[in-house]
Length: 115
Image (cartoon, rainbow, N blue to C red; front, side):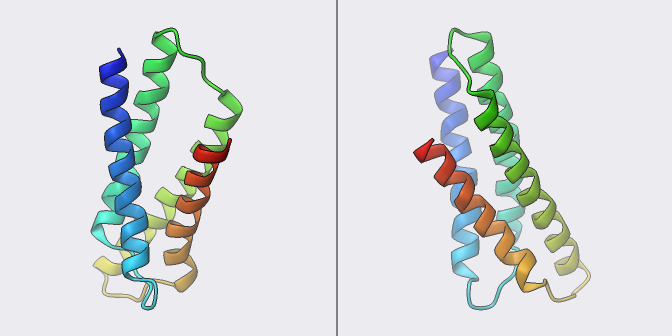
């Protein structure tokens, strides 16, 4: 179970890197890239898988922390999906929406590290 949890964690970190890297790469001209969209979905799936693997094993889960992180990630996912839809229609992505993807991801990482 530890190997499976570690594998989920690896992909979770890759999803985070895609979100933050895409945000920093387009910081001056805000947009939502395809990799940010993919990264948000990867974070959601692997985060739920990590919690499930901990619940099945003997690990303890801080449900309040996970709940807060899930709410933030849903915000990231909604902003990423809406941003990608704007890009698909050749419409400009609102600056606030593009920065919400990166900013909420950064807050999510801070909660993971400091809590």
